[in-house]
Amino acid sequence: MRRAVYPGSFDPVTLGHLDIIGRAARLVDELIVGVLVNSAKTPLFSVEERVSMLAEVTKDIPNVRVEAFSGLSVDFAKECSARMIVRGLRAITDFEYELQMAQTNRIMAEDIDTLFLTTNLKYAYLSSTTVKEVAFYGGDISHFVPETVIGPVFRRMAERKQKGKF
Picture 1 (cartoon, rainbow, N blue to C red):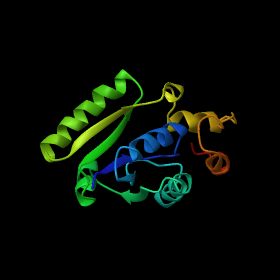
Picture 2 (cartoon, rainbow, N blue to C red):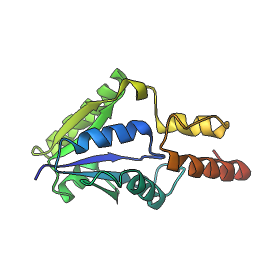
Picture 3 (cartoon, helix red, strand yellow):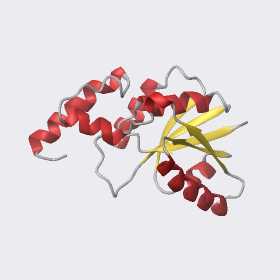
């Protein structure tokens, strides 16, 4: 079985993420979307909320499952018996960082390869950070995230504004 993991924070999931998920899912028998628990960051959504959102927006892709994880992506791949880690590349600046991570992972687990997928050009500019910034100022994020994510993003931004946190 060809199994891969696609790790990330997905805070929130974007149409760019979904593009990579859909394309990667066609290349493998099973794709596990790993939602990173990162205690060093203050995410917009809890890991449970991010897992739930991703499960909802990928429910029509039968060979995708979504799980939370903490720690190193390469260790998560090992735990899942995956032979590949999928990473999306938007720009050359992504490549430098991702190449370094892929090489490090290869040293740590020589039987796990990194599969780079270049983003669809219509999402090359897109990041979760961009989505949050546009939403914070009340902009239209409908071209950036799945429809089911729009309401939760704006509700969470409103909560953050009330508390004075962004």
